[in-house]
Length: 258
Image (cartoon, rainbow, N blue to C red; front, side, top):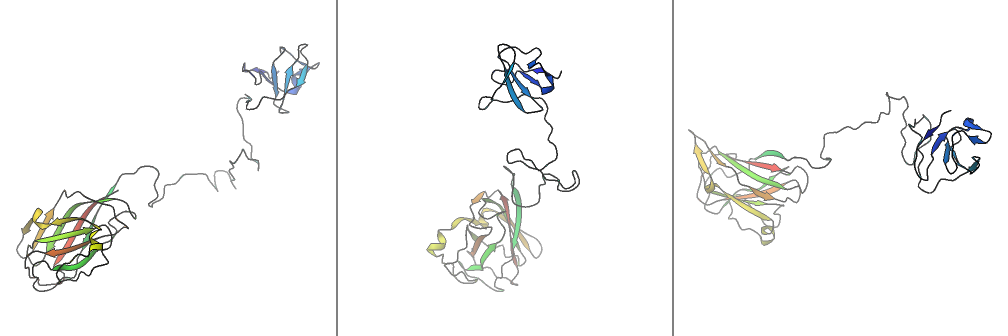
């Protein structure tokens, strides 16, 4: 006889099959016990004379019937269903992390160095001139609007001018004003609202080689909330450098990206 006792209140105390019924009774069952028949999926209660009567489980009660095996069929448990054409071969259920910008939970940041070589004047500048016009620093942010931190700036100078330069950094495109290479810098008030900081070559140092030089500034720590994935910069000279080529200057911006 396949009978087991659960001992729980208001749920089946005995799990059996209808074949265990003998003379309208279940051997060993006591009055008040609840019996669950696994073959008919019905419940009965034991009367005072040990006969059985139909019984409906209270709302929310559970049935302890041991291990349950889910057989292959189109039947579903609630909203859960797995449909495999060939189990273990096709339509497998798996979790795959694909390359991309969608992440699960918190992720660590990344770093990036982005180089910009603006077209400058092959000739002389005067103090407060824009040098190279407006720079777009594309893909500074990993995704649109994600915060970034400008950590370093390196400038290479093929004309070894070692100029004093102020670099104005913007979270969005300063598109209202006109910023032309070789013209005096005049920041538009609307564009000024997007200004997040200024980096100066006077805060670092130039190192000269034989016929070129390099400027380096680290640990800047300028936090930026970009409007897109790009940020922008406008550089102006405060002295009077003279360059030999339109590609004499390259700005290398180092970022930490959230």
